[in-house]
Image (cartoon, rainbow, N blue to C red; front, side, top):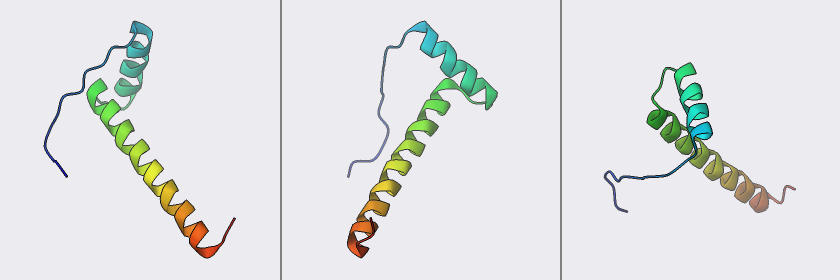
Length: 62
């Protein structure tokens, strides 16, 4: 697996950027840090949910 840093560029409309700025400011964070933190949390949530589903299939829980 390749580790290191990369650059991700994206375009968004002004309204979305303003909302992100507002959410980030409430948490004392930069927009970049807020977005990265959200992506990390979402990735963890997806992996955790997959593990739960796999465990339920293994034990036959529905």
